[in-house]
Amino acid sequence: MRPILFPLFAFMGLAQSPGTFTATGGMTTPRIRHTATLLTDGTVLIVGGLALSGPGGAALSSAELYDPSTGSFTATGAMVTPRFNHTATLLSDGKVLIVGGSTGEFLRFSLLASAELYDPTTRTFTPRGDMTMGRSGHAATLLLSGRVLIVGHYVGGYTMGRPTDPTPISAELYDPSTGIFTSAGHLAGPGGGATLLASGKVLVTPDHFDVRPIQSELYDPSTGKFSPTGPSAIAELYDPASGIFTVTENTTTAYVTGHSATFLSDGTVLLAGGTWGEVTPEIIFSAGAEIYDPAKGTFGRTGSMHSNRWSHTATLLNDGRVLVAGGNSFVGNIAPDGHSYSEGRTYTLSGAELYIPAVLAGAPILLSLLGDGKGQGAVLHAATHQVVSANNPASAGEPLEIYLTGLIDGSVIPPQLAIGGRMAEILFFGEAPGFENLNQVNVRVRSGVAPGPAVPLRLTYLGRHSNEVTIAVQ
Image: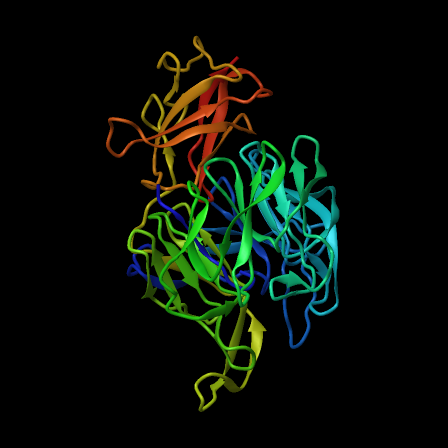
């Protein structure tokens, strides 16, 4: 299996030449510390954030949609509560869960416990219960059960790996079926970053740089407990099989904060923007980008963005391009020392650009019996290898074999699959035995799926969504 890359730092035109950025339409509102979520129809939902002006700026309630087919942004419904540093999680039914964050002004804010749901069909936000506490700068992970794990929160900073605020770092779970948040225990470390593993466990890593490695943890949904795993530092590889981090080559740039890290469709990782250098004021705002290749274990420079930016969003689109939107930028003159700006100003960007990778690969494609990617899917009963059909439907608890294309060879990042809007249990994913260029995902149908001859089935992988096919469920 291929290890997972974790670059750990503080906060964490198809005709264009590969490895370059090209401008696309601008957002309706300048934003920083917002969220960007790829929806099932291929559009991107941009929500909230700040529009900084001078030393301050107020939280935003507005939202907008980016359409890759037109390269334009359009306003959509506004949130009930203005917020920034929140999370946005696409649920198995296609709705987006907006959780927590901060509200108020940039330097005078309060933490939010509230949550909202965005419905793409009505383009509206509705309140959806409260967390057990206010959280900002946390992480939200969709589990294989369909619940959402909320980890960490802002505690006012860290010193030598220890929070300056004695408040324990807690976690909680959101259940979409009830709309209720419940406590999920406490973490030993600072938390901040979270990645779903193929086992269904969640690797929780620190989201800030410190002078010494900080303990990472694993959350096990089957036990509801956190347990320590290897300590992590700046940029390392984590092997889920051994639970060990190993040092990889350093990045070509000494990032400090505000950059983005995006998995690409070929398994490499794009790092873009942010700041680099020493502590303020010796900081340079970067327009640079680089690619990490896990097969070689190396970082290499790629084309630069048109604007230097930090605290932007970077979203992998269904066609393999990456949408980079918003963030803060700096215009000024570099001082003679080459490490700081002698004069200038920062401002919030509304502009966006697209990165074109060297390898463009589309989203996964579920195969269908008619070969057009629609209607009855290429799904077999695992026990008999017979086709799932209206005359031979699937049952709750039964393992199924689903055939598709588009998974990365050797990847340990699991796909997520929803049947009738409910997450199925992943039993296996990878190459279909005995076939080239064909993938297979084995799942177990969960109880509670509404029966019918044409129940919708959709797969999500690296944040991108497949076509929708159907299966019969009894």
